[in-house]
Amino acid sequence: MGSIIKKVDKNVIDELFVTIPSGTVNMRDDRKKETWSVVIDSFELSKFPITQEIYKAVTEENPSTYIGHKLPVETVSWIDAVNFCNALSKSLGKENCYTIDLVTEKVLLNSQANGYRLPTESEWQYACQAGTKDIRYGELDEVAWFKDNSNNRTQEVGQKQPNQWGLYDMLGNVWEWCSDIYDETVYGTYRVFRGGGWCDQERSVMATTRRRSHPFSFKIDDLGFRIATNSEK
Image (cartoon, rainbow, N blue to C red; front, side, top):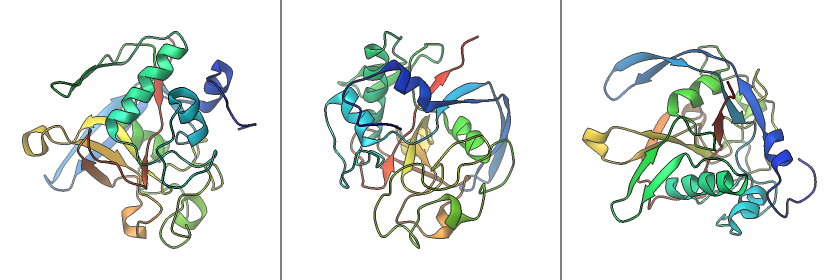
């Protein structure tokens, strides 16, 4: 990823992304005992979770508990991640994907905008599984930082083996916020995060594991995010 990023650079950001091909993913909700299929259009996804150097270059802040330029940014709420996406979009002359009303805590997504956003939950799982139906894309110790090998903290991104589509740290290291509301009828505005983190047991670090929490107040040292953008048509 080169030297320390001091300011937002379009070439650096462009190099972060890999193209995810179109396809279909099978989703499930264990609580509701429901399954469903989602058709995924081709999109771009960052190959790493957003690092602290990139986050600081965009926001001039670093909220992380474990400090290091190449470490994933963490201790960020969902709204922090969304604000980052809008700030990055603005800095590179792209359309904001999110409209935010802080008074009502309502956030609207413009899915057609050409700016940066969080992946949807289905996009995230589809990209993690790389077109398969597997719960992991390799032996866990080889692809993920989790409780047994993380030394009880985050680790620099990109050290473990990527999946078949060139995505690193989709499992382990930090959980990753997604755009979606988890279940509005039961949990209100709670948003989804996926993937498992550095302090999780093996059973939690799977492509299909789902978690959720409050989008404005919840932040913890094993929860970060990666970003997506629509493919040019």
